[in-house]
Image (cartoon, rainbow, N blue to C red; front, side):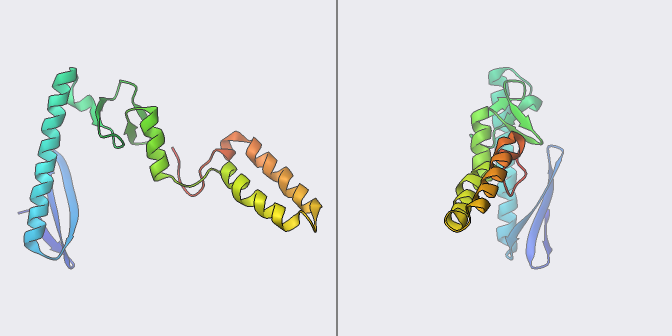
Length: 158
């Protein structure tokens, strides 16, 4: 049996199609943990069979077939797939949707336009217009440099 207890919770590990699978069940009950392991094995077997069927349908090898994490469709790596770092999606639309869902942080340009500029205007428009001009000049320079302006804040964007 591949279910074991570490600390207060049960974990499982097994080899499936040559790949090591190990996860925490986050359960204190051994029977529930065993059932979770069994369900994971069944899920992997169904996915493997689905992948083989799809590969036969489109006439490619199983190794070149990948499931898109965004739309859940199977696609081949050579057919317009968008890859960056270890992420593979089937299209530009799925990449944009995935980025939007996983990187909700604004770009530097959006942040400057929606947060810093209104703040500077509220702070300095009446009592110190020179400071407002200073902020606007710096914000214009930041937003004018496209690689920096399009960088998403608070994340590592691909």
